Image 1 (cartoon, helix red, strand yellow):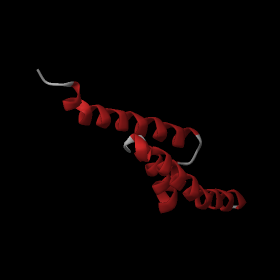
Image 2 (cartoon, helix red, strand yellow):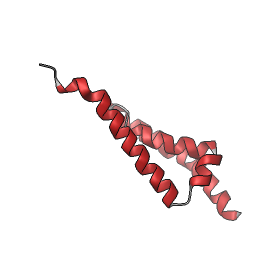
Image 3 (cartoon, rainbow, N blue to C red):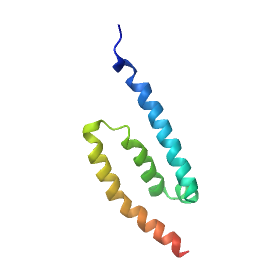
Image 4 (cartoon, one colour):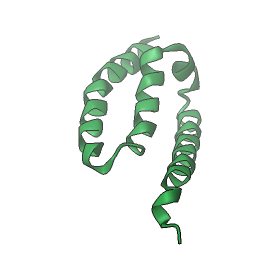
Length: 84
């Protein structure tokens, strides 16, 4: 009889899809759609946030810390946009 671990890939794909959709709705809700589409760093930041859910558990903290470091660049971009 097959074990449940045979289905781990599709479960992760579905979880990644739903995480991505949820984040996209939040981007739209916050009015960040234009920034997401025009600034590669903003795009990368949000894609990295989705990717954390797909990391092996032992690498999740490291992924989160990388995202936290990357967020400084995103903060600067957002501040510059507010000045416009």
